[in-house]
Image 1 (tube, rainbow over the protein chains, first blue to last red):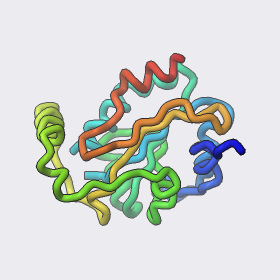
Image 2: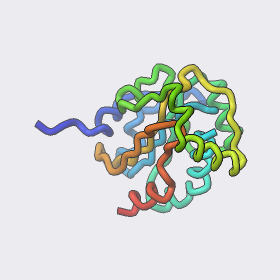
Image 3: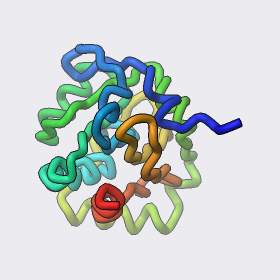
Image 4: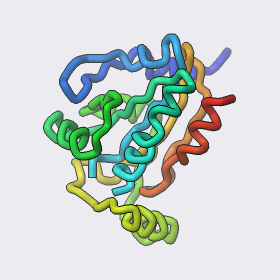
Length: 43
Length: 135
């Protein structure tokens, strides 16, 4: 059995952007590479 | 301050990331007011997604620090570097010990690069990110 990739695990998660518009995270790397940075906080 | 330093580096190299055909986005915690203020203060133009419940952080199994990390030598070095670059510590959010990460995914659900922070100032270098995008 092949382990699920992290990108596959994250793909379906929907998060709002700073303007409160929802975005499916996986749409960022659907057709092109994406650099995804998780911030610690905004400090 | 480490987040701001890292975001500033990404912002400076955003055109190089785009030139390699890649999207760039950040995921943060906290509320919208806080996120919008951060976006304005840092001048970023790439998407900033808000993960209030930390669902994506948990799915990515990102790490958390603790008070002992404040004493680590590598954090002292990173703090000195960030301060010298003009970055200052701002208000912390609800989860000050949550650590970050940098990934490159895609196209499709393909994992290409991963840097999971081990402590506060441990961020992927932009050179490593650009190098991974070129492979």
